[in-house]
Each structure stands twice: as structure tokens, then as C-alpha cells.
Length: 248
Image (cartoon, rainbow, N blue to C red; front, side, top):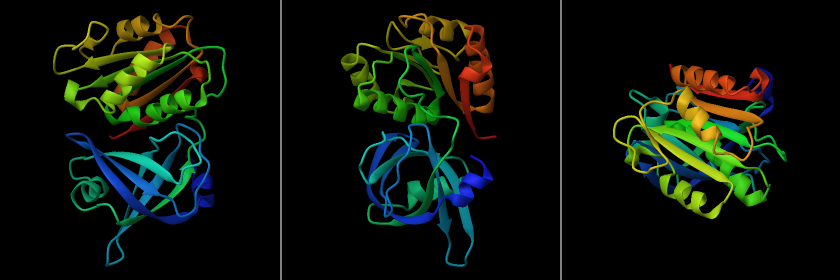
């Protein structure tokens, strides 16, 4: 996101219409837009909270829902230690409340559109959110693009959107799903134990019918560095690897 793009986006008031617990640390908030906008899978919004004394706090969150004509978007928000905004959402916010947001924002981490080459997605924890929007869009649009997702999570219970991803794996013949659990043994033969490395990325990419034409990586700074290097090792050009980073 650039300052110029943010400056052109309008703040609007949105109502929380539903809240869903996804993992012990992550909840989804479904927001009804007062001014609906078109967006591309991979984009995000800014959320602003204002205290009675005028103090404001702002954070950016990726949109998890697939682009559609719906006026409701989904934000999956992870509770962070000492997180002002995330603590508000987890401890205070409920259906019927209103919040301010602006968007859509982001012009580089975007679903590539119709393509004759597979797409490789690599995420960690809540970094799967924009990647989930891409997978959901891939299903809704029916684009014949093979997709592989390698997702790192601490435990089986921490896998964000786990049940939906497993169902998508069963229903989409050209979706490859591999989970890397860092704090417990893999639950499935096709999954991994341990942190994502070059070997895992190469293994998952090798399950695609042909080598991927691009890769999207989202997670912490350290994770993105490792995963992006692994994507480079596959032979992808640097410009074909899009990254999003969060945290310190």
C-alpha cells in the first residue's frame, strides 16, 4: 500500500453482522459495508478505532472473503499480545457494533487472473488470509488454474480455515493442500512436521501438473525470507514472487 492509494480511499462506517471463532487465537468478523466496493483477492483494508477522548488506533487486515457482489466482507483477526485493535475485536466487539474502515488497498499482492500456469501459495498462521481469498475466488470463478497451498501452523487446532480447506481439497481436483505443523506430528501422510524449508516447498510444487508460474508468500518477516528463497530455488523469477509481511 502506498500513501497515495490510502489517501484516495474513503473511510466508511460498517456494521459487524456476525462473529465466528476460527482457532483459539483467531476470530472472523463479517462486516456489512455501507459503501460497497470492488476488490481483488489479496487486497486489504485499514480499520480505525477511536476512543471517547479522541485517541485513534489503526491496523491493516487482509480480506478473507472472495470478491463478489455481496456487501459483506470477512476479516480474520488474530489476537496479538498487547494488541490494541485485536484485543478490542476479541474482547469487546460483537454483532451489531460499528467500526470504521477504508479500502480496498494494496496493488501488488493480487490474484493473477486467468493463467495457463499453476499458482503456488505459501503462508504461515494468519498469513493464510489473503491466500484463502484467492482460493475461494479460484473456486467461485471456475478459472482452470491449478493451485498449491503450503500452510505452516503450530498445531492441527491452529490451522486457520482448516475444515474449509480440507473440503476444498476434496472438491477441487486441481487444488494441492499441504500443512506443516511446527509443534506436533503431521496428521496426514501428505503433510509435514517442522518449519517450512526448501525441501517442503519443492515437494509441494512438484505435486502440480507443471511448475508454477508465480508464487504468493505471506507471514512474518523471517518466514517470508525463507519461503521466498525456496520459491526462488524452484527457478521462479524474483518478480513472479509476491510477498506480504506482518509483525516485527
